Length: 532
Image (cartoon, rainbow, N blue to C red; front, top):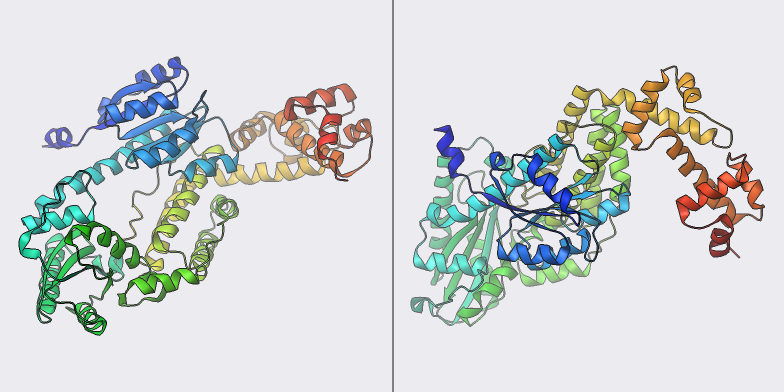
């Protein structure tokens, strides 16, 4: 039985992209991709070739380097997002800069791994992303079969999803004077659905459908409906005359009346329209209006609801860097209460700034990916790709639902870190970094810092490299050069005086190190950056 189930899983087609053929071959041959249910459909050595092969081979997943000649990984991901938005991307980078990682994440990469890549970690990430792709494919392929759609419902389903090249044959018996798309959901779905079996939920769906159609018929409206998601019902209401606005309002208010105890419905209605062939556009409109329920909990949302909400909504830049730093510190301290408080503050910010749920999901995904990157840098090698629960805003259709899911993710990380014992080494390194900052102007050796910490030099070197991805010397040079840059730009001190102040007793060595870090001499840097 197990083998039959494995064979039935959809195969994921993957493309490996790197401008060095030897790396492509290494990634292809090092891992047993077939065992993961993945077919390596090809290799590409630049972004342009990757785009061409993605179309030719119907690619599901790209494993790409970020730094390539011509079109780099970031531009490739941006192009994929425009042309093939279903394709998932896992990015590999030698860059540790947070802003660079955030740029990649905001292009919707599924994960961002740093070189040198740990093979077990890569396998874990790829396995998780592949499973997500399979779930999406299964949901799409099983949708019509599960619902046993009639021809009318199949037609509406294709309108809802704007299926490309769909033959939009208009069902003649649906012809009317006016149409309206209504999108409906159950409020607080994740909480309500807990403990309910599939059979019980199917029965609720049937009640839902029957209640809505019955209520529309009372107002002499014909209708067809289709579930685009377990918690997203689309209804096409057909009127044989043009109802007044007040009549539509009455219809919608009745449509969302509770159909059974504990089930609260809400809906969004598109503008009325008169051409049935325009249905796909109005399905999209109703879907977008539905997003605004989270802001004021209105049971009925109309186009003007969206316009009113947008006029008073500002979307500030969300500072994910600060949240990642706060969460990382709390996780390393194994302080569950502090982690929960930080998550609570995040969601208070989302509410105060009127974030829509899909925007909250995007912000949380960005924080999650960048936080995992930060933890990997600190030596958490057994880190997997999230806790396993997808932040679906139709399931978790409230701030509280998404906050609960984020807390589950953080608890999962707390448990992993507790198991790996990273909290102790993290605070040793943080203490060392503070001491190095205070002593940067003096000659300081790694064994001296280890002695100050009362640990062995070899253990100090190991945990420092694991935490910072830099050797002691590399870190000290970066620290001193940063101080030197500040002094060059803000003081009139001579260059040799600045070299001495930041801990370099040999002037020529200072100039050499400075140039290797900045690409210019201290005098050239001052000429470009001095504040007049």
